[in-house]
Image: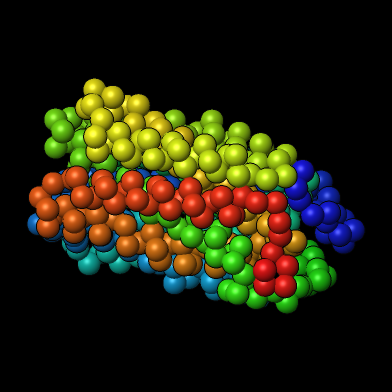
Length: 409
């Protein structure tokens, strides 16, 4: 396995942590992960209802998906600093509390509450996105691949369920788009309660982090760190464009809104086996370039199929995109661990990659909506997806090579 050998201090602290509450920790990671996609993927199928109710444009509707990404970009670099100062467990608990508040707030009436709550949701998820790979590397140094897979499956399974249930919750249960968005606050609140037991490990975690030797590596000058960052950002751009606009594209192709929502769920259900398997395979390989190559080809095939392929084969095209998305996301999460030498450095790389990466990704949904408004069609926006897919392959090849970030290289 291409991972660095943990120090005796790290092993001792991790064994004590796992022995004292490993099951609760795994359960906490699963539930926190379950909250990192559902609050976002539940929006896409409801965009049409939100636009009709509030009278907003396609471009403004795209901001509902873009705003959390901007929050990711702004807060991600500071998440590792917050964790070092207050303890990673305490920061994650506070983030889950903010997430609960944000979900409830955005489900209230009015544009102001909708966008303010969406911003809170983005800030909370940003912290969790950055710190989860770090806590997995610190707590499970010998099982990074397996735990990354578990975390990824939890995240994407809840995201898939949220996409499919959004319209039925809003229409069949009569809760409207407000209730369909607000219901996910229950999951966030339960997850916060399940994370509470980790607070007893806060002091142990602080001492363990302080005892690690901290390498003075300038990630911002590392070509490898930038390749990982761009790989992360571009695959995120594709995912959030699909989440925001696939239902609208499919509805204009003749699908009912409920069917379009479940087709978006198909994207996410199709990636589930791969979000578990790919991290395990990646951890056993010296170089991950073969996995990157397969991922890039699937992205290119799926996006080209949406533009030029038969409507009857839409399930095939979206499954290709889903499998590629699950593989790309898992590889990005693994690169944070495989290309670094400590949990601290993994958090720093995660912060950099998710800051710049999500800033790049945040352009996607709004640009996609803008191009659709300007051209009154989907050909140009889908052409953009094909170009992004090619770039994912290019930067992924560099990120997948067997090396580590050392001395800014």
